[in-house]
Length: 276
Length: 355
Image 1: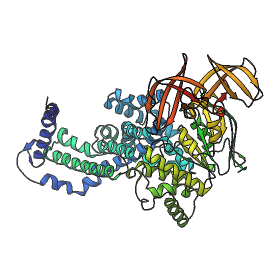
Image 2: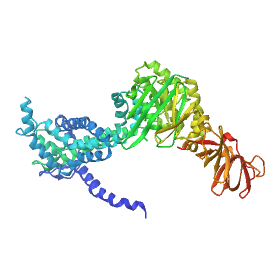
Image 3: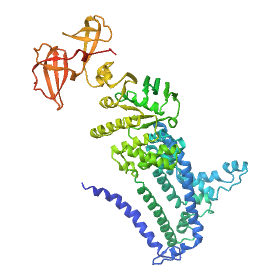
């Protein structure tokens, strides 16, 4: 049997449900807004020109970029020690701990973020504890609250690829470093950290890109006060004053941004010539 | 040669239920090429890792250069290890790999550069300094590992089967290279291998290990010519083993009855009549001759002839129960089914302690 036949089902699926809708979105992004906010076909660049407005860049785009970057950094700092520690456990314990990392996925994302909504309320216990130590922080409806939710939601995506690289890391390399006089700290900075770079990059990509387009977390935990890219797109399609062509232009722009990040990622991977 | 470089006193290491190293006591002298030889799982690598500091012995004491080092962390020991699979840092160039140990000592840049250059020349890798390990052949990687371990000028260099991954030709070349380096640098080499030929060729002295224990320590000649146990006689080279009983003694000489046959034996210690003994006889120490020659000790029937170029191997049945393996250089036209005489010098027949 020709192995190429195996391609067809998957390919058909992708064309039908990915490429075609993408094309439609692209077409819509050049169309006019109809009075109802839907599409009036045509060709103009007006939707993209509106994006030049600095208001978007300081607002939703800026928020998305900053929050995605912060989420990535916090996930990296929190996730690295976890991944490292799990990778150094004996096999049965390792599998159990990994299972615990992915356990939250057994519950719907929306439900979990809603749980955070309850936890972060001003009358919730977290805010209560913070108040009792003199910290009167607005959690719900603030970028901090959104950040907490995002880090919570995306931490496993950082831990898993990090774990995969750290687990494969040859321990004799660490022994060799010690043998040559390196302290634990030196062997970490000079050997372990650089060798786990592929995992750090993969984890960062897996966190940064989806967070860039996130809308559930900012919508629930931001309470409309933390506008983000994804929230804006969602509003343009499903909001009270829809504007499909502008929403489509936003979506296409977001995709372009994401592609840029991915291109950078693949470039990084290719540069690591010592691998393989 | 009398200054002790590494000393192990009653070192044992237990992993769960298994005793990997069992009361090993060794003294390795300064400037010596010392090998730990044994089959896989005999405890030789664990012993080496204890000396390197990667394993802590369950009991016993370790001394390096006369100082107690049992609990000293690896980075503070004046020893460096050449790892079995080299353990080169894949993200660093050859130069950076070699410089690593010197950078840890916080030496000035100029000094590091100079010493790295010198050691790369020593292992004949000059010109490859900016390559990554993955761009090198196995033999070159081996040299980088060697250079990296040598450059901090340790007083003892530990080598864990360093040539195991190389093909035969390259291995023989590297053996000579190692011997040359050791002579030039006058560093103590502690070498772990399962290759008996390699150990005999390279070592000043060696220890044969089995089941976590050291069975015999000695020069290659002592180990080969006077194996202390049946295991050593079998593992180092090859031996025919003959089980018999002492039937007559006269000082250090004795006559041993093996089945229907008798032979003369020289012994270091007095033997008693009727004492059961095991004798070891190397195949290459047996000569074949015509069966009616006066000096022929035993006669037998050739059952098998294997021609292997530099030697020919025979299986000769000398009694219904006893078959001897004989090895002669070259080919001498003896065929299967022929009757032959077998002779050997009395000192070739080694008395083995029944252990």
